[in-house]
Length: 371
Image (cartoon, rainbow, N blue to C red):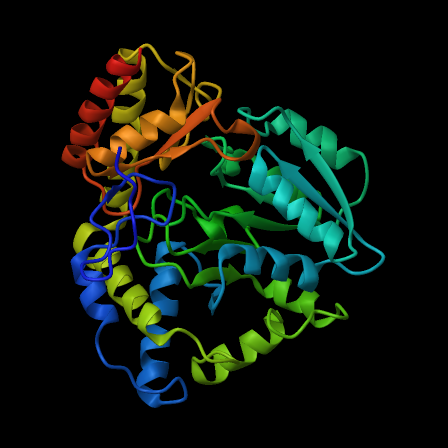
């Protein structure tokens, strides 16, 4: 079986169907390769502004949109450090590994953190959220839109009004769904919606983005010990005054972000992009059924960007992944405690129906051989 090594001359030749990082189209790679001015130049500020305004359109928001030099976990930590005061409590809804991570971030930063979780594979329901919120007074609620480990999409449109009615600020981790699933930030009253760009945006890793409400900025002003690198107020000052960042950002990636947002908004179109991701997910779920497999998420809560599939046939998943690598495709094993119990197929970014069909046909043949 193929042992894939670093390809110094050509880069990776694999076709990625992973939950991220994902395939980056050639047009984006060409943008990233272009020469850039410095991060304190007018040229950079113009580019930064274009990216920020594009993010506002993508998220249906008038809130300021900030760009971070980090993974999404950096903004998850920023939410905790900037929004929860010493005498307050944060509520962390968890449906998988990344909900648990956000809770662990709260604990590690010395914040009073309460986790309310459900069995992996299930979603947070309206009833569950109401019961959890009734137990205490919480200043901030943290929740995943799309849980990358379980392939579950929380019903954010139902949950957001319930959370906001409690008086809490709402932070939503949309890491593996932003730019693939519609998220109307202002309509839902989301105070911080965050993501990194190596998933549905189809960009190389290195950037994370978020929208921040006026209420969140106002709250952060009064929170002590916000830290330095992820201080929202410092970020806002640089952003509003000059469309810049406090420290040096990865300028080529931001050029790529600007180009990709232009493509998403003005060439593919938002609604068509969201519809394509939905079709990719339905096609994958159909394939799962046809091959006598089972989806891991409970019905009606399946993600449109990453499918987590039960190992109901007791397959040797590492061997299956390796055999698929021999054919030039990469999918991944289950995450954390779901390793070997599930496997995951990412269908996000610039993947088309013909791409997923071709890969799934190859994978079906491999499964028949393994059975």
